[in-house]
Amino acid sequence: MTIHIGAQPGDIAETVLLPGDPYRAKWAAETFLEDVKLVNEVRGMLGFTGTWKGNRVTIHGSGMGMPSLSIYANELIRDYGAQTLIRIGSCGGMQESVKVRDVILAMTASSISTPSRGIFKEFQFAPCADWSLLKAAAEAAEAKGTPTHVGGIYSSDVFYDERPDLNEQMTRHGILGVEMEAAELYNLAARHGRRALAVLTVSDHLLTGEALPSDQREKSFGDMVEIALQAAFA
Image (cartoon, rainbow, N blue to C red):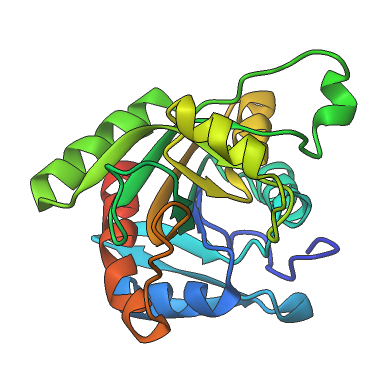
């Protein structure tokens, strides 16, 4: 057990999927895994372990934002031996070619600030995905026929953004979408020698204002979960 995870030794699989919402973790575990066991509910952050095609998988909520994800990813890596960590979550589209319901595979994750900034100080580290996971996810998405984009994303440290000038420059420089966790996940994976990837469903769009209705989100997020699982065990 750790401060934030009440799982016992052996309860956490080496492969962990990380949705932000603990109830999305519950939905994904019950939908895609077999022999599911609740392994954590400390502070309402739910974690489940089961099997997918005979492979052990943990699906664990990470909360909103990089500081929250950093807590769970650190403990999962250092105390439970997680080797492959894949963020599955929603993002906002930032290019006209990116449509609502499309999937984005984050090759890189830019940010203004992350919890790791205290380590890097003036150094501008460029966090990126694990190539083997990225390649496998792209192949899985192509096989499923899911509209998918591979490239850079932006991990914001605020949800209610008031920087239209920054958004304009990110769009100008080809950033595909914005979310709030991947950059720190990639930092931690690099630091500890683990594999990481962010597989994201576009739930709304910063340019068009289109948004996916809440009652359609779970169905649309299914492709993202399947792509992540297939990539993890390719």
